[in-house]
Length: 124
Length: 381
Image (cartoon, rainbow over all chains, first blue to last red):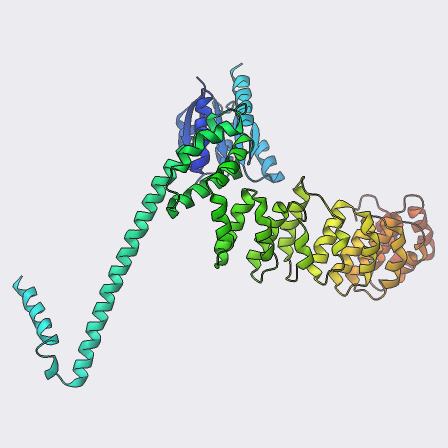
């Protein structure tokens, strides 16, 4: 069973994403802020990480940067969630190695399909 | 224990048996002290009561939030293939059992539905919109809009806007020209999104200023809303409100509304220099050759900033009718004007550079240096 980490500070969003991905058959780990997410990233291995960009303590970009600079974890797909569609933020994310960007508001089913694709790519 | 008993008895006796034996100034002081002590005690009681109330409120909020969050999170277990009605029918009975008369529950449920609605698209949004109405939360929003307090009004407008309650447009329009800037801005932004037939009607009655940064917000809403039927903004170019004129000019510019050309040309004689400058900019962008003569007519009465814009626009139009005028500008005492005029001449793809070389031969050393600069392709304007 593929393991996914969701890092999102909005409790309602976190819960919805958790429910959805569990329903899709994934093993889900959650972090309600950036610090928690960073700790989990450091101590666990995930098949995919879904993280909000703006979070308390540690931002999504820092988490992304840590993962992509770690020789073991760098192949983990990282999907960034953001309400900010600014060109420079997107560019910065892609420069740091983000695999995809999800803009709020988004369709949960579309997210589900994207996650499936990234996990499949990573497995084979 | 005896010590406290003695003190208590002493105070009691002071205020009962002995009070009338004291001189009047001491008596007054004692009464003031008594009053202060009672007031402080009451204040402590009041603060403690309020704190207890707030703690209870927070606890209740957290309890209901968790309950409602879990209930709403179940929305994601449905597939896109399930019918909207089916999902609504599943959730409505549970939600209608919530004690919605309790303001905490009402507030939490409204906030959570709004968060979901804001962050997710697709069927979830549709389901939430229907549930919002069925639970009569839209009526709460309407009540808020008609509340006396402007902050509550804004809250109601935001709710109606987020949940797309179109019938609220009629309620909201009355605040689009409110004295309170924040309420006005919120109402204008919501009205554009909610009014189905006349989303720009608020511009007809706008007497209050539309602040520059709010113009940016409205511009974003208007230009990014694909469902909006865009009218001819020339309709509002005669508005006595300069900020309405400015907003409309920006929109005419964005939507390239050629039908507004006559009205835009008329604005070259407007009293507000900002309006004149924007009009000149549009004339250049739309390449309105008819407007060249009008720009020429007003040129000499304008401040430097607008003169530069006129030269720029003449360059963009490049009809050739005003080449002599542009050439004569290089004898201006203002180097910015000289440079802009030279760039305007250069803009003509057919003969611009040839004309500059011709001028080069007949002009002063200073102008020659400037022409060299303008002709240098490595230097951008």
